Image (cartoon, rainbow, N blue to C red; front, side, top):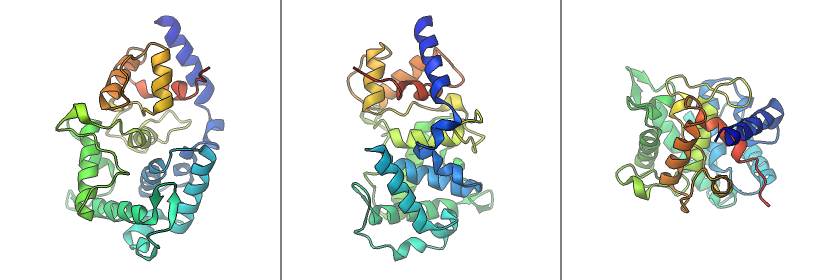
Length: 254
């Protein structure tokens, strides 16, 4: 196990660099300084982060250009109401999906928190158990409430029946950006949740690499597998298991 840890640590050191940012979707929240803009951009960009990387970056650029200098101001002033619903943003994500997400985010910011409007989305995700699955469920449920229905673009962790829960890869990636703070790639603008609370963002490639390395043997790419893999990675670093995302995504399979 020590050899595997050393191998993964080397890959983390290789990939977790400032040079990584320019070719990754994480570049977009890095463009903003206001916490509202950073968290909004993190969730919206992570939501369309699937498929060809160049296409993801182009789609994210176009989406954010529409929102102007402050995505937060755009959402709170309901600028999204002027969008043409059937225009494609990225693959199966259309303007109607962006409008859905923006409507939900506006609703979240307007929920009273300590006698004032919610000053950060972290308040939605934080709970005494430091359970990020529960936070994701709350986030999804409230956005569904704002729109009167759920969306396939916001994954369901299914907290009532965890065995049926989604891996929630894109949401966990956004949380990694917002919570981890090593001063390199991830922004770490949230302070109540801690890196040790996070779950690994699991996609097909990361799952396949993890099986090849003997980290997991479960075949399904779902919530249970995310939990198994994260538990395994905590053996290498209990305080920051998700840093190994920088290692697992970068392994090339033969």
